[in-house]
Each structure stands twice: as C-alpha cells, then as structure tokens.
Image 1 (cartoon, each protein chain N blue to C red):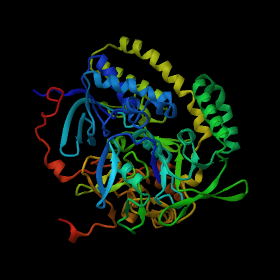
Image 2: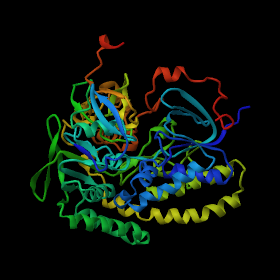
Image 3: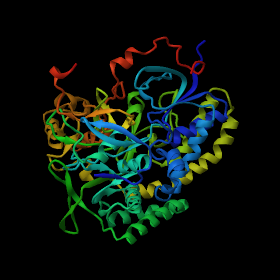
Image 4: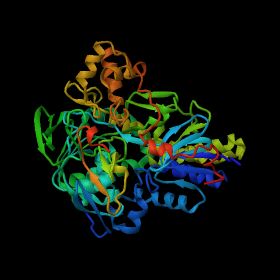
Length: 99
Length: 473
C-alpha cells in the first residue's frame, strides 16, 4: 500500500508478528507496519472487522497495536527502535492469555 | 522553593512555537509540552529533519513548509523548556497540567495555560470508511513529511478543501499514481463564494497558490470530477475503490488507497475537558471555544492560540500565539497596557490579512449534508464501538436527548478515541433527528485522562506538588 521514496536512512530491525521487518530511523511504528504490508493492523473487539491507521496524528486510535508487550499503544505516536516487537491485536483480548 | 512557570504552552505547532518565542523575548518562563518528538505540529511535521536530510523534498512539500524550520530551530536554541514526547492528559483551570512521557506521569505548575492544540481533519463518515486502505489526505501528507512515504498503487482522493488539492498536487509531484480526484465542490459553491471574493483579494498569495495548484493538477492529466454525491468505499477486507454519483450518473473508480478529506476542525478535547464556553460555526459546522482577540477564554488563566479556537491557518496561528502571550505578560505586570497595544498593533493587522481568505474558503468548501448527517443507516459513525447512523436515529426515537445520554444507549463515544471521531456527526444526527439546533443538542462531556495512560505511569508519578516547576526542570 505504501512505498518509500528514499531508502538511504539508517535501517532499524524490528519484528511484526514475529516476522523480521526493516524499518528506517525516525519512522513511526504505524508507518513501518503500513509500508511492510497492506493488511489490517488490527481487528476490532466488537465485530473483529479489519482496521488500519486512519489519521496518523494520534486522534483516531485505529492504529492500536501491541508494542514490546504493551497492548493498545498508538502505533502512529511511537517511533521505531532497534529490536522492537510489534504484534497485531486481533479481536478482543483473551483474558486467559494475559499475563 | 516552588516557582511555577509563567506559561504552560500545550502543543508545538505554529501557535505554540510562536507563543514560546514571544514569552522568551518578554522574559517570561515558559514550558512547551508536546506529544511529538520534534517541534512543528502537523503542518511543520518533521521539518528540521527533512531540511537536514532530504532538502530536495522541499520542492514537493513547499516553501511554506520550510518556513517552520526557523520557528523550530529558534525554539530549541532559546532557553525555552520543551517537553517533547509528552502527552497531556489533564489540564486544570488553576494552571496545573498533568502529562506523561510514556513511562512516568508528571505534574507541571504554571500561572497560565496557552492551549495550542490545533486542528484535526473532519472525520468523514461514508459507507466503507473503516476499511484498511482508507486514510485521510492529511495522514498521507504526514507520511510524506515524517517518513518520505507515498502510496504504492492507484490512489483516489475524495471530498473537498484546500488540503485535498494540496495533497493531490504533492502526490503527483512525488510520482504517486492518482486515478482521480472526486470533489464534492460544485459550480453552485463557486457562485456562493463569489460575494466573498473582493475581501479575499487582499490575501492574494493564498488565491495565487490555490490557482497554481489547480493548474498543475489539471496539467498532470489526473481527472477531477466535481459535484460528487453518494460517496461510498468499495471492498471487503480492504478498500478496492469508490463509487459516487456525478452529472446524473454513477461512477466507480478502482484504487488501492482512498484518501478522504472534508476540511479541518478545531480539536476541542482539551477545551471541552476544561469546560470552556464553546460556540458553533454555522458555515463550517464545527465547535470552537469562545475567545477574545487575545485568545482569552471563559477561564481567566486559560488562553487558546491557533486553529484550536477556529480555523484560520498556520500564519494566523503564529500571530495569535504571540497575541496571547502579550496579554498574559500584561496580566502578569511584565508589560503595561500601552506596550501591549504597541506590540499588538502590527500583529492585529497581520492577523486581519490572513483571516481575509477564510470567508471565501468557508463558502467554497462547506461540508456536505451527507457527511454531517449520513442518510445511509448502515454508515458507521462511532468507529470504536461500531455504532451506525441508523442506531443513533433509533436511539433518538427511543428518547436519547443528547450525546451524553446516547452513551448509555449505544456506547457511542466511549471507545479509545473518546469521541474525537464521532462527536461532530453524533451532534448533527441527533439535531436532525430531534429537529433541534446543534447548539441545543450540545457535545460530549470530555473527562480526564484526555488520552489513556497506564496505571504504571500514574503510580510512578512524584506526588510532591513542587517537584516539576520552572525551578527544577
């Protein structure tokens, strides 16, 4: 869905759902995920309908993702960092799976 | 000893940065608290890095964008305290501001508060607007500024407003493939805007920029379809394009990325949380906190500068930031009224100049009725709780008299975005269903925290009220 116009900035290695992804320094998590795949970044707790970032400026809360084990973070407001682990949130959280 | 800041400025866009400069030059102590990691707000997002690392992109993003660099650099080289990456979650009328850096909550004491929290794009509820592949035009512009990203694959833009055309122009210059621009603006809007033209002529640079943009888009060969209605987004798991009516027939345009835009509106979360008096803009259909010419609000210690008090653009926002600080300085006894007026005089005429274009833009790009009050019952209004226009109308018929009571019926406005996305549409739909005016219907009551924060962030907070002040930061 997206592409980078420049790719000369420093590579930042992250994982999205366990898969290695090469982000670039200064990118938000939402941007790094969007450029790696056009799939939904979460499904809703209400009906499990597919969603993806809508506003990219922190007001719509559609980009909620699990970042380094913390759920419901605004992926458009967090910059990528080396080794960051990002997970899509699918549906409502399973209480039994919560630590 | 506890020494509060003279001013806490919330937001580091044009209004906030200009306010900080003015405070610094008058010798006031100011702290700028901003959610982003670098100054600029959305309009000058990432401007320092773009200029340092890919200056060739200024050709696409515009010289007006580059202007933000001076403000941002100046703020960082001055003595102004800038709390970047800090999310403000509560503001009190006495000047206490609560924020968090993501790990630890903090309490800031200030004598006055300047809200420079800016605008957001009007949420555009149409069938299918929740599908992946649908974003706002501003969202893609943020991706261009912050990450040099553009859509890969065909793009269609729909809606109206200066930003829709600006983003279309920038995407074309960036090499994105635009399938079409479908605008709700029609010939009748130009006729309605005509009487506003003489006043707008005094702000010629805006008119010239608009005409140049249109000319470049035309020259690119990207089709512009005007006067569209009945917009819907097609697709199942993701967007595949849009369908709409124009010129008496139905059009379908295939695209992987659908960009929506229908103007910008003040972001009123903070002003609502402070319970400031708000008014309703009849042409542009938005709420604005009521302010005087200096940005003073119904609360003595709270000022608002920039688009958060009504949409007038980045240049006017800078001026209003300075004006607010002049008034605060005179309240605090740092300057007398005569000096305030001497300094304010050129600012007022500058503001007057930038404001002159607004009546024309407001008349040319009004939000269409079908966005304000979607006719299709299945259209999702509250994206978080998946509440439709039909659900809201049904609740109204069952006795829900306003947005706050609607929460008990449907949970609309109670999801993570806290009503940012559905608030305006909920007010309009209830107003239409109940035959009342938006002012009679009112808006969601906004409560702290303004954005969610974790219990750990709260628990780690230093509770000594004197901890975070101008003397200790």
